[in-house]
Image (cartoon, rainbow, N blue to C red; front, side, top):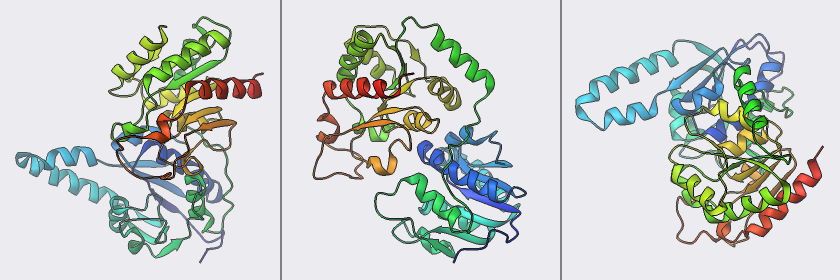
Length: 360
């Protein structure tokens, strides 16, 4: 049952621990809540890796951090169990320190539902069975329809806000990118030779979903063609552990494209992407950092559904090879034809047609 917008709400907790893309997908819901309840204190519970995307956001009062990776490392070694137990106790105490009028579970799995269970909330709201997994629906009192199959994750999260009876229309969310990072990104692009479009390229993906990657040899072939056809200014975005991958792209292209290195923070990457004309890459955090800032995307999709995880409300071209097993949730695949079946000439043509559509 939806509540009336005028019902007093003074405190809200959003629970979305990971991953980077999914945290980004929750920002429009956060901002819808902030507009509807301007006097409310809003907190967000995240993990270490995603906290940097949230700290400094104007709609948030504070970011709580669940130190999952640190705890996992400490619990693997018996001699650090006392430190792990003390850390876990501090987290639980911090989570329970404030009572909330609303606790919203945007994640909907066992990891997030345990946090929701521990939090002090008058109303605990999440997705019904089918929109969550691992029994997460059992720990919320109010269960929301996530929408039909294929609903984008942004729209799914907005449904939690709409359940409260408030306007929950999509608006492009704010990213707390420091002004200095934007100035540095602008200077980085302006220093590159060429007169063509600024194209940010991320050839990687998360390590546990490495089979989503388009081969580096094909990126190299594609980028060499774009550098020639468009006089494009191309920057390769390098994620953690992707040095060899990026080196192979450059080697195959035969060109020394500048690299935005892995030492940069996510918000620095966002600043770079925000100054690009378009983004080229797979289903990864940089793609989401790009399209949520309104940057047009050429997105190479493999196992996951682009209608759920793809670029949202920006000019885009989505490329994947049709397979009967799509979409799938496998962590590995011996022959990922869904991504391997995409040919460089298709990607080159997609970039050319998108640039023709959006060019000033």
